[in-house]
Length: 301
Ligand SMILES: Cc1cc2nc3c(=O)[nH]c(=O)nc-3n(C[C@H](O)[C@H](O)[C@H](O)COP(=O)(O)OP(=O)(O)OC[C@H]3O[C@@H](n4cnc5c(N)ncnc54)[C@H](O)[C@@H]3O)c2cc1C
Image (cartoon, rainbow, N blue to C red; front, side, top):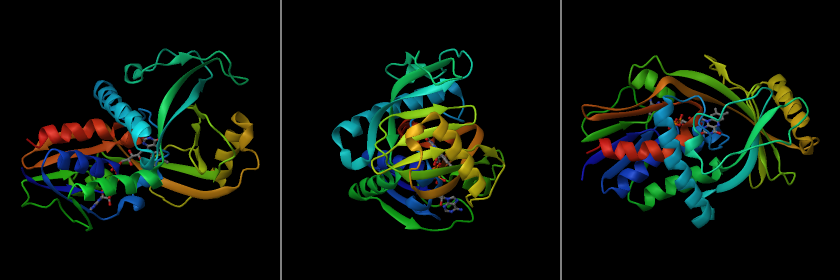
């Protein structure tokens, strides 16, 4: 049993903490932002391997997470995870997605909106982050871990193992300038009875139904740091979504949100002395979370 300090209370830090505690380690989490203040809280959060590499590892991590989310949706409704069917649509013919082996099944779609020639339908976890992050934090505490607010200037030395799950914070804490922000803006509207998700990757446009609202996106602006929602961007997001999902017309807007995805040329998951770096999950941190957490435990020895 080791004394482990996890830096970061987003989905990656909390999931790693849960798996480390289950493996019998003593775990404390420290973070500048508490769970509901993180980028993870802005996440849409749909299981989908997006803006994260390398493809082989991302597929394997995503597959592990898919199975965990599927089980949670079945056994633990309090977790905020639901398995939802939906469709991704394309204006051109597409080969099978590179991550196809991570999902149990994926069917080609023939009934498509005007202007679209290809698409696929599959069942995917939708993870309601305002419910899920407190649930994860509760798991950390139930298992004997702690979560403390602390703004670090450097990774601490002293614990047996330090796990760096600082997302974009790795630019400072690991002097890693290859992690860059990719700004994402979403609009949440009231639930109108929508049951299926829809993704159109070109714009991109996505619509994810949750229990009380619908998350509509999005944007994908590399190198942008502003976390202030733009009204013009929100209007454009809604316009695009309403064309594809007419049921959204007139739905009341309840929230605007912006987050900065921590994108890196490849996810960093490696040991370096007493430090395990686990960051750079891009647009797929939730999707990868249970897979990478298992690997953090394996690296912690
Ligand atoms: C609009 C949007 C939509 C998204 N949709 C999806 C989706 O549908 N599916 C999906 O899988 N992913 C999605 N993502 C991506 C996902 O949100 C991220 O990949 C994920 O949140 C990264 O998690 P993380 O724990 O690494 O980072 P974060 O959630 O950013 O957490 C980092 C933690 O490190 C702490 N930290 C940083 N610096 C310091 C410091 N100096 N001292 C102490 N603590 C520090 C922070 O305070 C925070 O607690 C989306 C992102 C956005 C913005």
